[in-house]
Length: 206
Image (cartoon, rainbow, N blue to C red; front, side, top):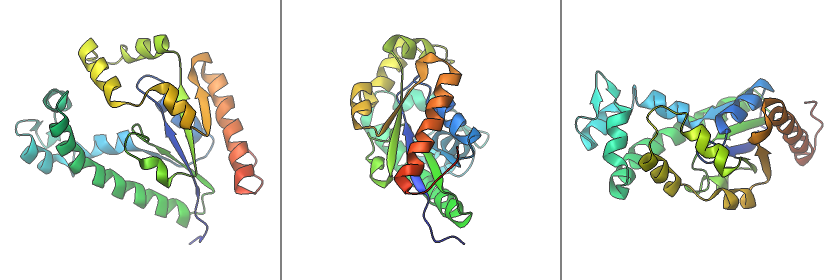
């Protein structure tokens, strides 16, 4: 087992900014990525289902959470959302801890934690550096409405939960502009990894 802790690069970005695609580019570059959204999807089909059914009756069926029903139940209801987060967040945190321990045991130099509400939940405290993915408001809106089931009400409610993009960019160590195509975003990811290698004080060929 390696004693050296990986450099923790946290990745975030508001709805429709291209964060998931950027996470894929880090993975393509050989960096282990912990995807909080993917963990939540798995929890909604397994470990979290009984607790969610107890807290929000009739939002699950066949051993899975009905995401549409659950979203309708908590949308715009801060108290309900807090109850849901109290169930889900500790499970996601435990998954993240296991991921980091495994990455360290394998000797990974850098890992990426993909956390949608990074600043909103104070999770940036455990990051060595933060990458924010950004695009224009027009492109953000266009991408968001390509998602199934997106409505004006849902879009407004999701944005209301998120820190403004300008503030996220201000707090970031690195910003990926996702508005200029995949190749441009990949190049930015490679450049970030080169800079991280220098921050770690070692050479890393990316």
